[in-house]
Amino acid sequence: MKILLAVGQSNNDTNRHDAAYVANQGVSYTGYDVQIWNPFAGAWQTLADAAGYNDPTWPGSTPRPFFTAAAAVSLACRISQENSEQVRVICPNWPGAPIANWVPATASNYVSDKAMVEAALTEAGAAAVDVVTFLQGESDWTRPASAYRSDHENWQAQLRAETWCEAETPF
Image (cartoon, rainbow, N blue to C red; front, side):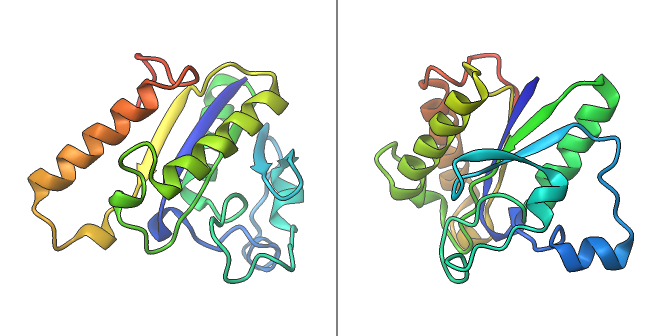
């Protein structure tokens, strides 16, 4: 089993895995051993179950954390297919959020993401994440690249300081 942590803002978040899209596009989750963490239920769900999930408390709330993660789901499906193993995805999404919401480690998004990761890992019986993606940046487009790069490096260092993100975990 591999654990994929896919963090980001709205460029990590799309509703393209909702039930209507799946039905209209003929998307099939058959053959992929992928599960997604549902923080509302506190449980792992299959892709098919997550695609049909509708939490009435969700609209307008953040993070928007699981079935909407098209980029993460695509990557997880590929990893699962190529390695013939289960992949579990933890995907906290924060639309419109600048990187300052993750740096430093006391920042609101980082604190929430950390709690989500730790709950998901506990439920999975896993000690660490295996892969991390970070799809974020459009809220920081006016900042100098060097400042953003520094914050991104600090974010990676924060993750690597956690017991569940090892030094060799690929980003």
